Image (tube, rainbow, N blue to C red; front, side):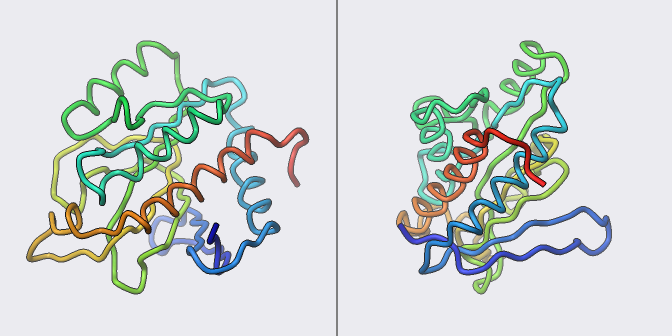
Length: 200
């Protein structure tokens, strides 16, 4: 499976929140995967007293928006020890996300929500995956008024944004790209769950 080209760590300008970024590439780098898993484990360990919820956002009705449900399905099949919402069978999308988030908060007291969604960007950014602190704003590129969700989130840039036709990515994104990015994100979380000792 094609995996990572590089690992980059920097601070975002403005709000100072850390961004951990990778880009899909031609080579498997086990060391980079271990670094990412350790970063995620350190984040999850801070929430030891809270239930961890992986919220995978998107719709299986369009290729460009199907990254979230694909990740959720893989995580469910791998039986990760986290609560997973958003799969191909039961997607979390614009029409039901508010209801789903309300259900999560009713089921769990102060849950730690880790959101995952597809995103758009510059052509040179296609294939990037970023891990960021703070809530995700789903549907931002399509100017949808949806709730911000998540304590941390992952975004994967699946296609270029076209201001004149923001819905273009729904129909013209390659499934090959979305599938590979979905596998990478899922593998990050699977490896995180498999870690037995704290990371330094």
